[in-house]
Each structure stands twice: as structure tokens, then as C-alpha cells.
Length: 418
Ligand code: HGY
Ligand code: MN
Ligand code: MN
Image (cartoon, rainbow, N blue to C red; front, side, top):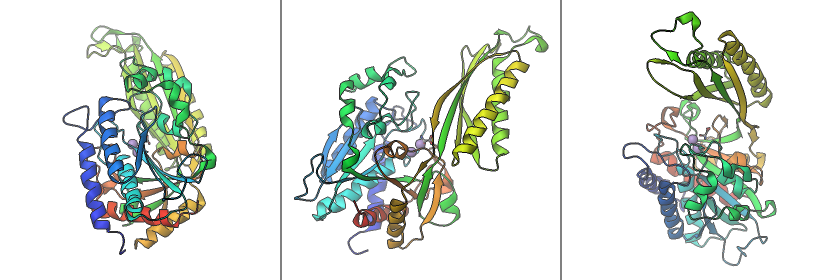
């Protein structure tokens, strides 16, 4: 590809990701949460790169950094001409890898730069978007920043609190923004031609099939069940086993039951409990109050909803058998998001143009694309990651694969019909 140098693009992407990876709330692991000082520093760095790439940089009321570019002569303002949005997230999980989310932002900047610097003409504008809260680690909700861009932000989310009791509203204000401006962050559907996100696969399929790039067909639906168990705190040494109402033992039984039921679906549904909160944890105390959250995913909405109902019955049965008080709250119910067929085909053609065979696969992971689908047609391109490992500091994508991905993104943009 004469006009594109994948090796150079991959090496640049790697350097940019290492620079972003050095911005963390903790010295020895990557932890960058929404509207924190680390988010501020990462957003500033991304804004610097966007500016250097020849993009017009702005930032909305939820901290999404936006790099806008339009060919000379194409009115870049609202309501004139369409925009192709290219985005992903710069927030991370705790003890994260360098590539989840951040690669999509870096790739978007490098791809947009190709057009901005070459003075290329496109019949639509490009907007590179760096979202700040895809992971939903700080506040008990996720995709708020992409939801705001898509015009579907829920104002009630402003009252959500983080672990320190800080509301999202306060966090926005401390970040130097005005919550009243959030509504103004939205693009209108009329001006958006589509959204594309480049992301590491976070699974083993591309590596197993020896393919560097893939086309995402759909983003799996998600259900979250918050399960509160009320037992009776007691002395670990004096309460006879048969007289206990141990909320943590009940939680353990529910966790194993969820795992067993998910295994029995032969891959149709996955279920995970990654957070268990014990109100008064102590080695010598029988836990009296525990809250756990079950994360349930599936590419099939009927299968997911059926699993949720069956699991609720199992949870009730465990609580009754153990004489535990029980409160089950569904805190998330997100339908599977299909990727637009024409955009999928455009991504496949772009991958072929880089000399690879486009594999099509669903995403078990959630992405900002689920929010952006409220605004217009979406698509995602996956990049192979070593061992399929993600949400883990061992996460890795090679500069060679990242360079191919940016080259494919450039080819996609060239072929995109707004
Ligand atoms: O949970 C997810 O799938 C995403 O990484 N936030
Ligand atoms: Mn991600
Ligand atoms: Mn993630």
C-alpha cells in the first residue's frame, strides 16, 4: 500500500499507547477512571495528538475529547454534510492492559491524520471521539459519555455515586464542566453517516484462526443482577454450623450455581460474578450482609432473558434454604446490538485490501457502539490480541497487527458511502 505504511503506523500506535499507559491513579498498575485527574491528563494528551494530526479539538461536558476534520470546502458545521464518527474509550478497568479502548482512539487519530495531512478530499467529515466512561468502574452505570454524544444520556445518572459518595453531577463540576451542557453534546442523527470502532478482540478467535483483523457482527446483550443477601452476623467461634445464617456462604453457593447454569448453555450464555461486597468483613465474623453482582451476556436476547429468569429462581431457592433475606435488582438490561450490514461489508473489503481474510465474529464484550447505535449505523473492527487476554496487564496487540488495523481503517474511510 504505497500511500500507507502499516509498519510505521503500528510503531507509532505502540508508542502512543505506552504514553497513555503511563497515566494511572496507581504507580504499579493501570487504573484510569471517569472524570478523575488521570482522565484529565489522558484527555489532554489525546487532545494534543489530535491537534498535531490536523484536527479541530473540542471537549464536551462529559469529558469526551473530539477531533474534527473536514475537507476544505466541506462546511464542517452542524446540519451541513454528514459525519463519520470514529471512537472508543480512554478509561480503563483496574489493573488494565494498554490496548482495551485506547487502541481505537489512537487508531482513529492516525487514520484521520492520513486524510488531514495529505489534504485528501472526502465527501463527509470525520470526528474522532475519545470517550471517558465505557468501563463503568467509577459509577454504577456505563456508556454515559457515548450516550451523551448519541443524545440518549439519562439525566438520572447524574445522581449516581462513586465509592466515595461523590455524585456524577459533582464529578462533572469538579472536572470543570457544567451538567447543563450535557444535552448539547449530542450529534443529530441527520448529520451522522455512521460510527466505527476499532478494538482488540479481547478473545481468542482471531488468534486461533491466525487472522490479524475481524469484522464484528453484533455486540452481545448484557443483564446485571444485583443480589443482596441478609443473614445474621455472628461469632465465627461460637455459633454452631446448623444455627448460622451466613450471607457469604449463600453468596458462594449462588456464584457457583450461576457458573454451573452458564456452563450448561454450551456457550450460549456466559455469567460472571466479579464483585462481592461484604458489609463488615472480618475473618472471625460470620457475614451478615453481602451484595454480589451477576454479569450475564449472550448474543441471543431470548437466551439471556431466559437465563436471567432461571437464575432468579435458583437465587430465591438458595436464600430460602439458608433462611436469608433477599433483594434481587436488575441493574442492567441491554439488548444485543447488531452491526450495520453495509458497514460490515465495508470493513471486510478494507481488511481484504490490506491482504488479510476478514473473519466475521460477534463481540462478547460490551462497547460504546451499543450507545452510538442509537444515533445511526455502527460497525466494529477487531484486532487480534495475544491469547485473547484482556482486562489484564498481560493484554497485548502487536505493532504489526495494529499497523494493519490502522491501514484497514484508512481503506474503510476511503470506501465509506455517507
Ligand atoms: O464489560 C465489558 O464488556 C466492557 O469491557 N466494558
Ligand atoms: Mn473496551
Ligand atoms: Mn473493557
